[in-house]
Amino acid sequence: MSDPALSGADWWNANQQNYPNSAEIADLAPAFATAVGGFIRALETAGAIVRVSATRRNRQRVYLMHYSWKLAKGQIRARKVPVDRTVPIIWDHGDETASRKAAQEMVELFDIVYEPSLTSNHIFGKAVDMSIAWSEPMNVRNARGREVLIDLPRSDARNPRLHAVGATYGVRKLLTDPPHWSVNGH
Ligand SMILES: [Zn+2]
Image: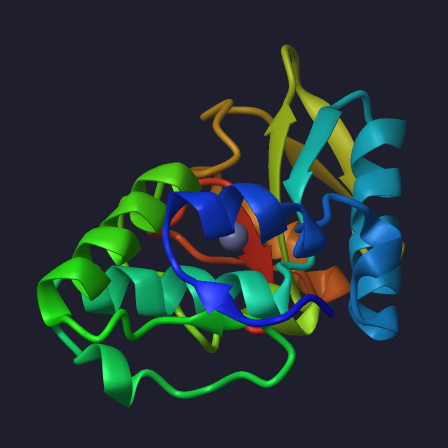
């Protein structure tokens, strides 16, 4: 790990690539990876097009995003940001205005639009963001081996039968977050 350096755009450019998120099923927690794999196989067998956009979120990346946001918004003082010994960043520029400005640079580079949760299921490899598309009625085998007819609405976010099939695999829909499915629906 490099020596700690002051937060801001330069820090982000030099370090952010060390904290990558994943879009691989294999990076999920093993039991949830099996659940998601089974659900996706059943969907693809039935003719759906599945695209996975996010699986495990990097824990240090979430820490950086969470505290950049809080500091930029004035919700925490720079010297109060908890230290993560695995992340070589100095949040406190010795001046609150400068510390907030540097945090705001990182908020913009991370492209954060709302406060990142430190407890998201993504951090623990127990959530997946994906889109599921189908253009005609399809019979999807649930985890109990029964075929379920899924047609309208052709929206992965709004089709309760699709959500029920996912639940048999242990992949549960969060209704308020269109691409998001997880181990417990959160
Ligand atoms: Zn998600």
